[in-house]
Image 1 (tube, helix red, strand yellow):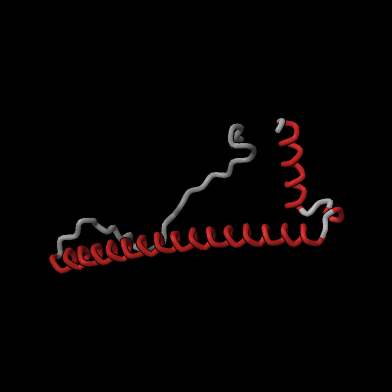
Image 2 (cartoon, rainbow, N blue to C red):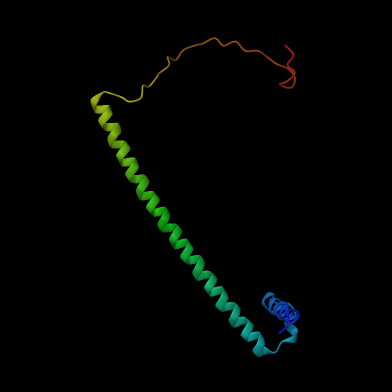
Length: 114
């Protein structure tokens, strides 16, 4: 079979699968195309379903890992809190009135006019 003939057959097959020029086919050919499409669609759905299941399992494993990490960090926090030796110092600012000096610039940032 020549390459030109192979290309022509592929084009015909493509048009069949895309539903183009179907009026030239007999009923049994249309049923065959329909069955082929249903089979292909079921394979696609099965693959999609499998990929979703794998992704869900991966996310569940990640969730378990994060929950364990969270539990470990909570224990560490409680130990530090009970021993009164914090790793991180918390700085608490006093609340009150503060005076703030502001300046107004007019124009684009590169050309400021005071």
